[in-house]
Image (cartoon, rainbow, N blue to C red; front, side):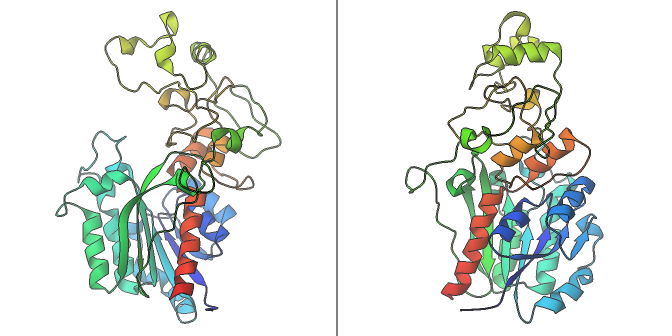
Length: 353
């Protein structure tokens, strides 16, 4: 059995969803990189890497990591994790696939570090929409091609469902993994109709948290604070039952825009108790931005409830400027349990080689 550990260099780290999952799997987080100030503070507070670079990756030279690569490369395995911003490829973005978006080419920046150091393992995550690009337009296709030229065994890109790995949320992600050592496969699903364990539900994830009114904060639970609601929005959510949305409001409670617009029917919607949640976004604490209403309490999800749905542990504390910032960090994160499954998969891969 190998005594070598896996040392993780976490690019586009966000608040630390992937890092937390990898930590729970027994991997060591050495470096984090992200340009978001609040996410950086959250990451440093919870993950405690040896180095954190709070900057745009385009401003960071590859030699800034050399000290840490040299420190660990000989006696350990090195894993580079790249979860680049998904907005240029997301279905939520009306201008997706636009090369005018400066974030479109960020995978090329990650590739720059991979080509320089050739780590033992690669973990890449993004939205399924990235796979829809034609090969000659796709940064992912170009990245995959470079990996194979460098001698990596590549698996994916493949769409996985987070709920199949113990995350109480329907969240589809595009993942590519690679190994310099040998062929590598994806971890087997652990939850669902074809598995021994059922899907984790919203009820299991958040029902034990203290009840809150809109605009209130728990003194006992970290980040359990709800956004304020206007009188009309409070009246709307009181009229909406579990699993319903604005489509169930009539008269003065209905949105006037729906007289001519039939889309976005999930807004002001309540989650269902006994199913996994819908996909959380960066607006997951806002009632008017999706089906982010509590199943029975008259308010939107709190950042702590959203974090539970993203499978963060209860003691993971989000830093920054309040509910909106905390919610954005949670919505941007890779679900912790999904990352943990892949972390354990890398460890098993080493044992199998």
